Image (cartoon, rainbow, N blue to C red; front, side, top):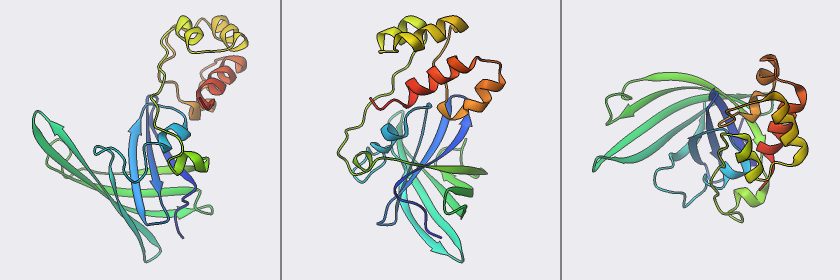
Amino acid sequence: MRPRTDGLYFSIVSSDSVAWLRFTDEHEVFGASSSPGCPSQIATWLRPGAARHIPRGSYSLRDDALEFTLESELVNQRKLDRTQHHHRASLTNDALVLSTTYSIESTMPAYDGKSSSARYEFVEVERRCLDGAMKPTQFRAVTSIAGLAKFGFDPAMLAAVKKNKAATLVKLNVYDRDRLLALGLEQAFVDALVAWRVKDR
């Protein structure tokens, strides 16, 4: 089964970190880790000609498994460090779920030799975000209600936030809707945060 190329795969690493993968029809693969944000924004980073620090590689299908290596370079204190993530993955549910195990080779001792596994889910992304029609943008970070107003949080959303008296809103993950509700946050507050985060801006 081939990976889908009309969007991104994402894996929630923690409350403030999401891992992303993008596959292309040309058998290229790109990866990134970011604070939670809009998939259409992430897609603008993950394409041919991406910045040097974006992990990239190629993929192949072998024995019903998807194999790929993501290689990245990082200049650290004037030294060039290289890291490779070697993945062997499987696709299920019409390629909407990707499960992978990977090992790491790195010139950085803290990462070299480590291995782990991850589960990714697929999210479709507009073609204009994938083909380069949209330029990469920076995420907006909000740490206060005043920050929400500054960044265009509409009055209804602002009222929902004030009602919950939330002091710190930075890095909330739009994919953790169920978790946020389970924490006892009111429905209107969660809806407001999700709507603001996924708004295409």
